[in-house]
Amino acid sequence: MEKVTFEKWDPAEIIETKEDVIAFLEGALEENDPDFLLRTIGHIARSKGMAQIARELNLNRKGLYKAFSPSGNPSFKTVFNLIDVLGLRLRVELKSA
Image 1 (cartoon, rainbow, N blue to C red):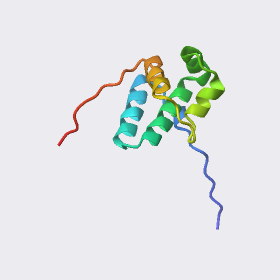
Image 2: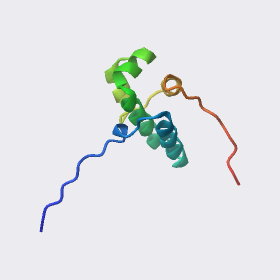
Image 3: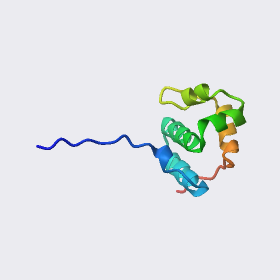
C-alpha cells in the first residue's frame, strides 16, 4: 500500500481580502465556540502580518502569537483592538427564532 502524506494546512495563507476576513469571522461566530473564534482571529492576524499588527497594537509580536495560540487567552481589550486594527467593528443582533 502506498503511503499517503498530508501537508499542514494554514488558513492564514488563504485569507487575502476583507471579504475573506469577514467570511472567516462569520463562520467562526456561527460555531458559537469562543476558543474557535480566538483561533480564527489569530489566523486572520497572521494573514495580515503579526509584526505589523503587533506594532499597531503596541504589543510585541511574540506576545501576540502567544495570545492567539491554542493555549492563549487574550483579553477582550486585545481582541477588540485587533478587530479595530483590521478595519472592522463588532455588532450585536438578535438571534433568529
